[in-house]
Image 1: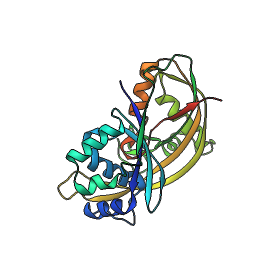
Image 2: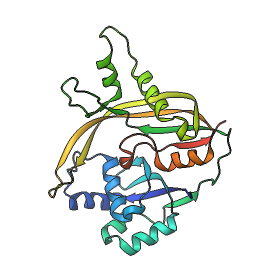
Image 3: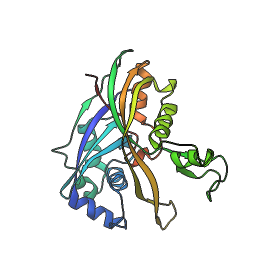
Image 4: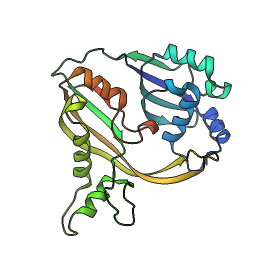
Length: 244
């Protein structure tokens, strides 16, 4: 697998224009969904597999992501197939990319941080939610233990990530901590003809720590695909740097 980290700069005025064209509720749409719509319109199936909104400002939004193609190829794809509006959303002169290593040697350690949406599917109906409903992992745990049993939100989220960082991910977690939490109001559209928008609330959690690579090929695939739900909307990207 060939993987590139891409840095995209999105123009704020065109983002707003796109939101209006898609009839998104500007007062409520979250940055992750708006960026998802923008890069999907510009790049289609070649959009970065996972991304992270690093900063969202009135004039420009900075986005990091992982892509199988370098920025030059992405620009050519957008130039050939995107609408004029979608093409203008990306500041191609300022955007850039770098190739990721083709091989990560076993035993190498990295510090990492990631923004995740730690949710689970209910195996049975609980607390007014139907079987199969997607709920906050912390709430799900609270419903499963006696009311007087203390539960730490950070402990639940760390356990959630450890389960998803199994052997198949090619890494071993060495340390893990929660550095941020908020309940995020998100806008999602159904796939019907009218593309009706609805608001949902999901946990947005920043987790940091350090990891050790045990299988370089699997780890590269993990970087490419990310971790957890809502990866197409700004969650699940693993950002790494060499351990000090």
